[in-house]
Amino acid sequence: MQSIYWVLTWACHRKCKHCYDDRFRPYVRDALTDVVSEGRAAYQRVIDNLPDEMSWRNEKTGRRERTLLVMAGGELLIDGVREELFYPALDAIRARWGEKAPKISIQTTGDVLTETILDECLARGVESIAIASIDDYHVGMQGEKKFKFMDEIRALMGSRGVREVSLGGEKQARLKAPDLSRQPKPGEPTFLFFGAQEDLWIGELWPRGRAWENGLSNAGYDVNFCSRWSGARNFLKIGEAGSEIAIEPDGSIYPCCLKTKTALGSLAEERLEDILRSVATLPAIQALNDGDPERMGEHDGVSRADFKKLSVATDGTGREMANLCLGCDRYFEATLGKQLQALRDKRLKARTVSA
Image 1 (cartoon, one colour):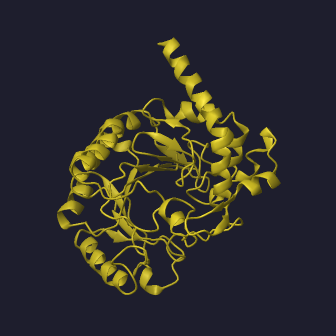
Image 2 (image 1 turned 45 degrees about the horizontal axis):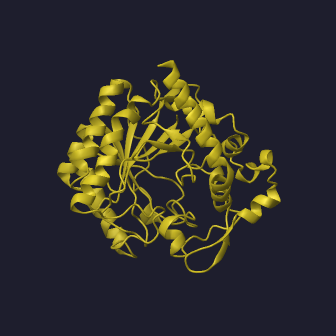
Image 3 (image 1 turned 60 degrees about the vertical axis):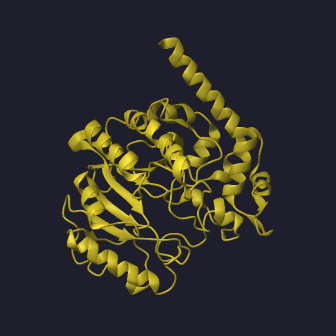
């Protein structure tokens, strides 16, 4: 795959009003142990069931490049998660692929990052760090506060030789990396800033989780998240440009970071190649792979006009909104989820018989 987005845990030290999943929140005492245990029970099987070759073909250069493995939460760097789950997973990745390991990138709010933790991450092979809190939704980052925080992070990273790069699309000069005159050298660790805003990631917000309940998603029917990066487009093309899947703590996999209503399968049970080869037989899955969710029901008699009607819902504030993701949710709930479950049962039964 070109990229894999792996949520290791739901545990977070924040409960942001714009978060796309209600499960990302603080957990304490036994609840924290339980939620971290979900990731601990699955991470080794997830690693074992990922492709042996973690690379993709760059069409522009013709060369193969290492898969980008984005590891995220929640927050991976908080106490109770870092030593218990995140670091063991990093060690297991190195043990599985050695020098051919994917490029490890982590997402963090950055406010829990210390010199010691940064050193420990770099020592375990982390090559890229995304500070994912640069927006007005994160408490303590509103207005000018975010720029002071960015200066503190830049000083910390500079002390360890971690070079700043740009996500692209920044309009404000203060959001841009100060020196883009040279590209990072091979193996040189990097960091970048992003957040939920037009300049740095996503302005409309996904129609999911607390963002939906709080009436913060302004993505109309013309906003096709499926065709964007981190959407489902090209997710089936293992080893090719644009291929990406998302993984939940229990090993469930999805064609996009937003996550469909039903998982495609579980890496705690099966290899990634086997799951994708199986689900690719469904016309609706092919439509998602093409970045055209409006087409996903045509094989089952759901026209584009019908799908548009499915895509209307009322958010938590009483606003009626329409978005393709909402139609996808409805179609998964009514039809596609059952088809995926039938394929999953068939695969697991075949494995049992073979064994």
